[in-house]
Length: 263
Image 1 (cartoon, rainbow, N blue to C red):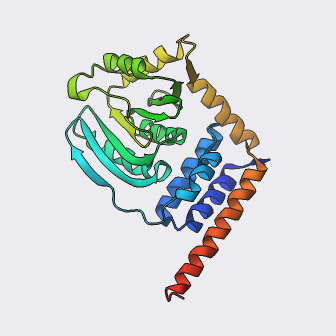
Image 2 (image 1 turned 135 degrees about the vertical axis):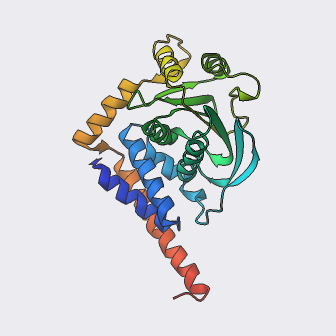
Image 3 (image 1 turned 120 degrees about the vertical axis):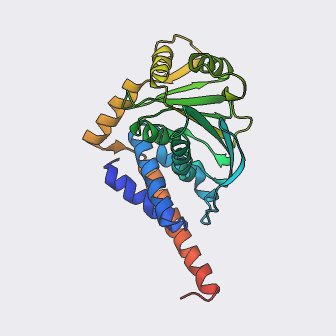
C-alpha cells in the first residue's frame, strides 16, 4: 500500500487528536511521523508502539537544572515525537547568544523519528547531534545545514563514537557530550560550528567499522525522493489498526467526557 505525504500527515493528525493530544502538538507529531515514514524510518510503527502510552495532557516542560553548556529537562513521560520540536526550539533560542549548547530530556521516549528535529535545526542554519539508547544498541543522528539530510549511526556501544565527536568539536570538561544513562533519555546538541559538523559527517560516512550500521545522507535522499515520487510504501494492516485504535480512543474519551457532565 502506497500513500502520499498529505494522506500520512492527515491520518496521523487524526489519530493524535483522537488520543486527546492538543491541536498544535498533534500537527507537529503528525509531521514528525509522516516525514519519518518518507525517510524510511518507520514512523507509523513508532506511533503504533507508543500509542497506548500517549498522554493527552501535556504538562509544561520542567527544567531540572540549567548551565550554559547543558540544560536538563523532565519530559514528564511524554512521547519524544511530541516533545522533540519544543526541545529543538529551546536549543535554537540558546544558540542566539552562544556557540554551542545541549539539552538532556529525561523521562521520555527517544526514537529514530527525532531525525525530523535534526533536519529542522539544520534548516535554521545550525548543526546538531542527537544521542539516545535503545535495548541492544545506542544511536546518534548528525545534521548540518550544508546537507539536506542527516546521517544516522547505530552501534552496540557508541562510547568510542562519542569520544570522536568530543575530540572533533573540541568539547572537554562539562562541555563534553556523554551517552544517555537510560532508555528514557536523549541528548540534543546544537552548534554554530558547521565546518566541524561537516567534517564529522564525512568521517562517519567513510567509516568501514563493521559494528556500525550507517544510513548516509545519500541513503536518506534517495528514499525521500522515491517516496515523494511514488508515495511511501506502508503496511496496510498497520494503517488500518491505527485507524481503528484512533476511533476507539475517540469514543472512549467522548464517553468519559459525557460521564463527567460535558455535552
